[in-house]
Image (cartoon, rainbow, N blue to C red):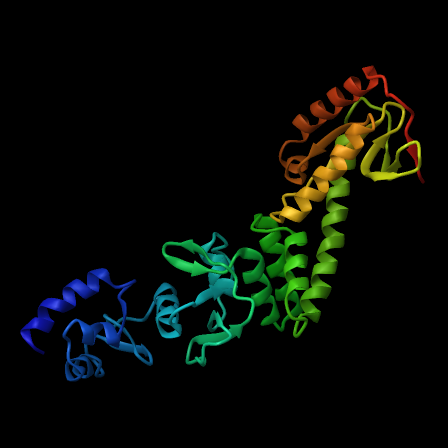
Length: 315
């Protein structure tokens, strides 16, 4: 190796992403093809991970190095998705698949190799960045992983873990599923239906436990509320008609459309003289005592208000 190359390699090593570089970078820095070949021979200090991608080390590559190699191999526009994306965003306990799943624009002509699965898509998501890595947002990453999970037990576990971790909600996952291709989504769709029903049942159980511990009369549950003219205003998760109090169990949804819908319902109810209390789902479990105090206070405030007109409630 030329002396220029010997001086170049340490600088490249310090600048390389986890020791991963493209051969084109080495050549541009003055390292000859023959020098690269010598160093990548068995027992040499470097190794080839993928076509055109080297690891400046001879140990077993870490998963992070494989991710960096997959991005270097895929080139411009690449976004890491699936379990690797989720792990980089905090779900570190999820089991790793055999391959790093990478998304590319549909116009790119790159095929998967070794430990890299390449998926070309017309719906390339805007990446989020963690430690410099371009990652698919949680809902997209989860559904991409779900489509490649053939085991129904592991599929349910994946979706449940993502929701329990708070990375996204069932509503986020459902919206992402509906926005993409239906190909290969039947199992994920069925699992989401199950997860939706289970999440609703758990939320209902938590809400009822909070109400049962309050010094309040029992409400009606999931009641459609109309104005006196019969115009629907929305559905109250819990409804105390005697004081026109609507308790709404909120959502941690990241979707703006869900937040806007909830805001519209709350405004419509409030404009008709209803006292509205909205509680995030997370607080039912994390702070039931605080929720009981808020609910009791809201009930007494509603009782002192004089409603302009009586509410009409449909059954």
